[in-house]
Amino acid sequence: MFKNLFFQTKALPELSSQLDAEIPRYPPFLKGLPAASPEDLQSTQDELIAKLRQVLGFNQRDFQRLIQPCIDHLAAYVHLLPASEHHHHSGAGGLLRHSLEVAFWAAQAAEGIIFVASGTPVEKKELEPRWRVAAALGGLFHDIGKPVSDLSITDEDGRYQWNPFLETLSQWTTNNSIERYFIRWRDGRCKRHEQFSILVLNRVMTPELLAWLTQPGPEILQAMLEAIGNTDPEHVLSKLVIEADQTSVQRDLKAQRISVDDNALGVPVERYLLDA
Image 1 (spheres, one colour):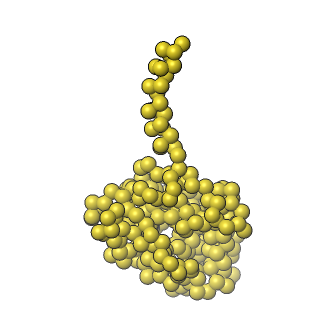
Image 2 (cartoon, one colour):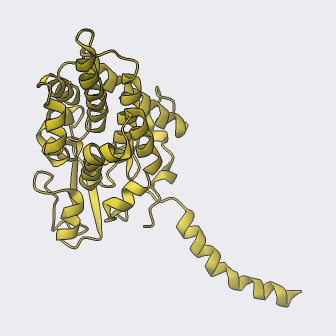
C-alpha cells in the first residue's frame, strides 16, 4: 500500500505544471501580449464576421472586395489590445471583438431604418446599402482612436514604443522582432479617443471603399465620420452606433456576471490568462 502511495507522488510535478497554466495571473498582462499574426486573430472571430457579411447582404465576392480589407487592417492595427482597462471587453483582443460586435449590431439595426425617404427606386437601391455599410463601419471604427489616446505600447524593456501614426501594431512587432508587447493606460483618457479616431481612419479604410461610399455624393461618408467622432449624436446613423455600442457593452458585462450599474472591480481575472 505504501509503495503505491510513493509511486503516486511522481505525478505531482505534472499536476503542478497544469495548475500553473490554469491559475489566473494578477496583475493582468504581466507576461505581455503575444505578437500573433492578424490572420490568427481574425480566425477567432470568423463566426461574427460571417454574421456581419450576412446582415449586410453582401455576397462573398463583394464582401471580400469592400469590407474584408477593413477588417484585415483593423486586426493588424488594434491587434490584441483591450477595449478598456477595467470595464467592458477588458481582456486581450477585447477591442477587436467589441469593434466587430458594434459593427454587427449597428448593421442589424440599420435594416429597420429607411434612410432614403424620397427618390426613385433606382436611387434608393443605390443609397440604402451604402447607408447600412456606413452604419457598420461607424461601429467598426468608433473606438479606432483608443490606441492613440488611451494606451502606450512598448516592448518588455521599454526600448521600443509603438507610434500608431507610423505603422500598425502588427507591423511594429514584426519590424522590431518583438515577441511580446506591454501596455500602459494613460491618465485622463475618458472620451478622448473620439477626437483621434478620424485621424487614423486612413490606416483601416481603403480607397476603393471610400470611392464606393461617396459615389452618390459626400453625405453618407460625412454622416459616418460624424458617428465615429460623435460630433452629431442626434443623426440617425450616430444613434445606431451609440445604441450598438451600448448593446455590446451590456452583453459583455452580463457575460462576465457584472451588473452594468456596478463598479467593474469585480471583473473575473480568468479572462486575462494568456499562454500564447
